[in-house]
Length: 567
Image (tube, rainbow, N blue to C red):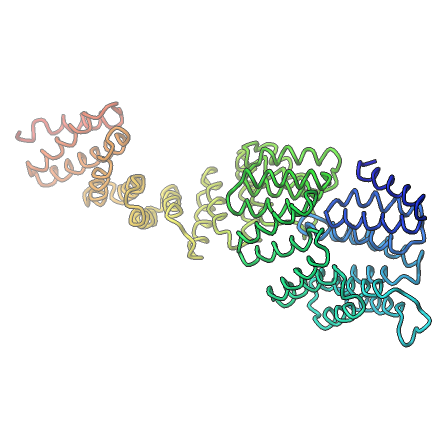
């Protein structure tokens, strides 16, 4: 039994003694509704269950208990299950109609669930049933307080807004009736504000109605939260921060305000403060699974993967049914370099995921985890699958190609790189590796043109010249044409910027030029060409540490020229 629940029960017992059971139950419902609004869904459920144990005939309790499930879904539609939570709500609404058939609220609830799955006919049928239970000219014998009638119309209008059904006639028509019945209803102006912003994108009228709600109930932080969210939509972060802080001043236990503060501060790169506010949100929301997952999502956004793993493992102690936890663990373990664990949870996620729940990013992490665990052939499959799901992620083609390069499957790598380039998404490094792939398939011509283009894009990248020159050497194997000469000469100029670091590149370049001039001397007997060959041989021998593959070649050239060239 939670601390809040114990307190509620004590209050209820006291009120029963003082004022009778009906008044106590009414107060308990308000306490539970407040817990729902503060996103303390588990605590609210505890209160509703206790109320139903006292009175199984109270339709209001069934309705607000069911609404508690719907509000939990709407608090995080990305991670919460629409089917599971709406089914739980619907069961309670149906029980409410059976226990209290004259209460219209549960028919509104059933209608809202129908709207959430886009069953407009069923929704309208239940809304009509709810309205038929209200006093009217046809139902003159019905007696119901105007305030309760207004609540029915407000909840009906809110159903359309929450479900994203843009029926302005139904929404504003219902709200006008509600206002005639009870123009001091706090929720009326909250819902009216929501209608203006979410259906008509009218921030001014939304703010006006939120302000009216605040004036009607100055001790509630909810209207402040709504105005803050309004300023967030307008990217006016300064005013949003002010309103969120005012909401906290009104009620320091109102969890959603801390969540919104955390999100705002993370946008401002005030990550430590953001995390503190999310921790407060988690504490006040009772640490329920929904709140903890929202906190985890924020930690991932803030790249605090280590803390995310800690929180996820806490959730798993009490809830192993939520497959999104496996997804989040896969992401977080990957980002902390724990690739075996990332692969384990990725595979676990996919083993349980329904097709509609799989995102391109899920395949990305699965593919990357396979790559990091040296399973590149499988990595390639899933990286391409991720790209097929999200063709804007052209970078995945490069990653897939790299997996093929590691396996020396150069033809496959060429396909991937060319697919990316054909989409006009190629970046310089793609041309470099594509050139290497061509080189390794002995397609010297394409290696030449591709690496030449790479060097034009990145003129200071030495390796581009190295592999471009080697491609030309393989085209001009006798060196008679000297196709690689100018490239090696350029390479020497680039490599001279750091002769210690680039000694291998210099040795290769000098060795080529030594041989090139030897070939030219042999054909022409031009003494100057022979001297140039000797000069480059000496440059090869001067480089430390020596490389036998080049030094022996240089010594051989010097020996062959010793008696032929005049010093």
